[in-house]
Length: 48
Image 1 (cartoon, rainbow, N blue to C red):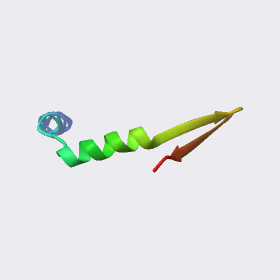
Image 2: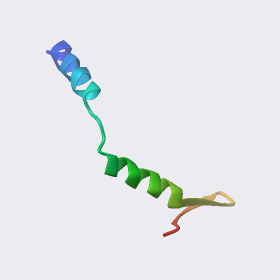
Image 3: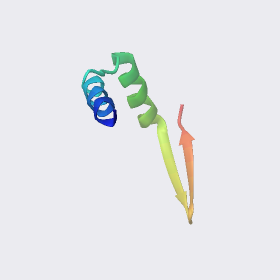
């Protein structure tokens, strides 16, 4: 049973492709994200 499940999972993972708008959204988000280190704390800020 476990063998069949793992084989099906590997096949379906190879067929996944993100849409172009998803990739653009993630790239824009990563460009706008800023992480500020202050002593031992980290602050995340979105610069939009």
